[in-house]
Image (tube, one colour):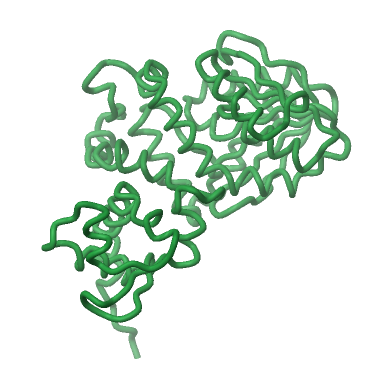
Length: 341
C-alpha cells in the first residue's frame, strides 16, 4: 500500500519564518530573562514587556506550543515559566547564554535573508554594503558598541563548540597555541582552563584587543592567555604548536582561504596542528543542513565567501604541505577540521 504523501514538511519549512520571528522577538523583549526568578502570569509579562493586550496570549501560547515556554493553568490565572533549555541558554544572566547570536539574527540577518533570491542571482552580498558601501566588518569595527555585541554573539554560538574542542583534542604533546581571529579570547581561555600546561595567545585586530584583555582578566587567566594584535591578511602568524581559527576560514573566498592555510603552515613546527572550527559540511553534501545554510549566509554577508566540506579542507591543506587531516565532531553541526604538519 502506497504511503500517503503529505505537504506537512513543505508547509513547516515554508512558514518556518513564523516560528523563527516569534523566538527572535521573545529574545528581543528579554522574555526568558524576565522569567528567571520564577513563573509569571500573562498580565505580569504584558506589563513588563509593554505588549499590547491583543497579541499577548497568542504570543505567549505560541511559545508554549513551540516548546519554548511552559504554562500551568490557562487565561489570566495561567502562569508561564521557562523550559530547562530556555532557562539555561536564553536567560541573559546564565553563563551559557546564547541569545547574543539570536539578537544579531533579529537585528541584522532576518531582514537580509529576505534578499536571498537576489543573492542567488547575482552572487553579491545583501547586507549593509548595499546601503552604505561598507562591508559588514567595516561597519562593525567603526562602532565599539556594535563590535562588542557582535563579539558576544559569536561567543554565544561558539561556546559549545570550543568547550567540546578543549575536551576532545589531545593537547598532551603541545605547549603553545595561537588563536587567529580570537575575538574575546574565548577559545584560548577554554583551552587554558582545561589544560593548564598550555600557553595561549588570542590574536585579532587592534580594535578587538581591549575587549579580549578585559575578558581574560575577568577569567583570571592573566599570564596564561595573552591578547595580541594581528592583521592576519598583512601579518605572518605567530609561531605556535597549535594554530586555531574559530569561524574564520568560512568568511573568505578560496584564494584567501588558501593564503591563511599557507600562513598557518609556515608558523607551525613539524608535528604542529592547524585547527579550523566550523560548521563543516559533510562530504556528500546531504546531511549538515545548518552548515549548508551557513554557506548561504556567507553569500548574503560576503558574496564570494563559503563554508566547506572536510574533503575540501583536506585538499587545500595537503596542497599547502600538511601531511594528514581529520575531522573531529564537536557540538551540533560543528566540527574541528585538523591538519597536521
